[in-house]
Amino acid sequence: MKIQDLPIVEQLEHAISVVQEGVTVCEADEQLYKEAIFALEQANRTEEAIALALRARKSFPQLRYFELWEALMLPVLYDTDEQIDHYRARYSAGLAELISGYNLDSGDRRAALDAIGRHLNFYLGYQGHDDRKLQEQYARFVHAVMAANYPEWVKPLEMPALRPGEKIRVGFISAHFRDHSVAKLFSGWLRELDRRDFEPFVYHNGQTVDAVTEDIRHITGHFRHMPGVLEPMCQAVAEDNLHVAVFLDVRHRRMMMMSGLRLAPVQCVAWAHPITSGSPTLDYYLSGDLMEPEDAQDHYSERLIRLPGLGVCYPKPIIPRPLLRKSRADFGLGEDRIVYLCCQSIFKYLPQHDDLFVRIAKRIPEAQFVFLALNEAVAKDFMTRLRRAFEAQGLEATDHCVILPLLGKFDYWNLNLVADVFLDSLEWSGGVTTLEAIACGLAPVTLPGRYMRGRHTYGILTQLGVTDTVAHDKDEYVEIAVRLGANRDWRTDVISRMKSNHARLYSDTKCVRALEDFFRSVVVG
Image (cartoon, rainbow, N blue to C red):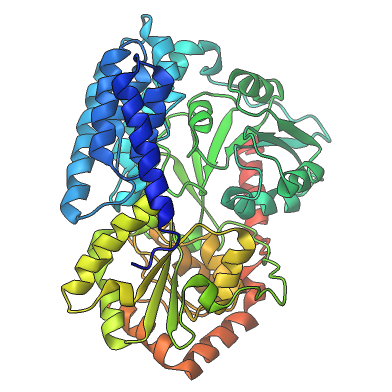
């Protein structure tokens, strides 16, 4: 079985056994339950995690977050299409029952605040469906909880008057102002925002700081690092009397809670979380025109703002040369193989698309697909699913598939440099990963989906002006992947044209100028 460092699987299983035994033999302990449920959830043992959350809910009825956790839990990785439908229906029913079970006019409001403060509504968007209705239901619940606890922060706000010479105050809020995809995507906004007209404020709620954090601190005159707190952060935003607040992402507990308040007259959310927030207190969704389908507004509760291009000013990654510290063999890859890099988060890979790898392998016998897994238990489940798909066509998955653990930045770039072709995931596309793959000299194969989250790579290639590897259906996806793998001359030509057009893709400031115009329009009309 080609899952690297397989003994760690056994370590994880042992850890789960220990916490499960602790729950069984020890006096009921909240922290022990949390550790056991989380371990099972992350190991993709969803039904066991749900059962244990239900047991914890009965042992600690006053702790409502166990109830929320149990009702809304979703798998990390799905085994079948039917399993997606099952868990989606379960989530929908659980959310409705959960909301109806709270009386926020009573003592429930503090318990509800504690519950939403511990829950991350993360995996819903990876099922490949239209999530607007469910997102709105959950966001309205969050807003109701926040309004019950902080009525002073949900009232409509007047737009602060601009005195002559005064700048428009824009707040950028995130828990990820560090070496993270959020900061990578949106620090260009901060860097390029015209300081003659705008005064940026940055609010970093995350615990981690690094060189990226310090860089962002230096490019803004107002940097608030308030790790792990909610109320002081809200107070700081409110006291700065912003004209506009921009939540760079709401896929974080405290960010979702804050976005349910009214802390600025105009509040926006950016596309780091490429799905509608559903929040009644987020007014605008800041996206990129090239990634959005024609009917895009229907997918958002917010008013959609289609900034030019990708909507981000993303600098070209500086890939150190020579970076090749590791060979293919170090990654478990063959020197004589055609290596297809499939580096998206493992939960982006849906079972209905496993056939793509099989179809490519039947045409390219030397094809080797390399994936990165969240942990070894999930890797094992994914390999089981792949094996089933390959065996159905008379092939062995382990002859073609390698699953690696998550890699550090330089090892990850090194992996890009030793690969031949980049295969984009369907339904939820690569963003930063695609931008980095192109900088490393890889040509991505992509099939744009129905929703923006499945169209990042399509937008990137469109802005780049090289769309040879954009497919219109799964059959064409396979044809393009096979041609890139088999025809080195064509692959070299595509990559050469991409490199020639890098200036069209990276550090594009047109979106920042459009963002400034948008800010002016909502502040001064």
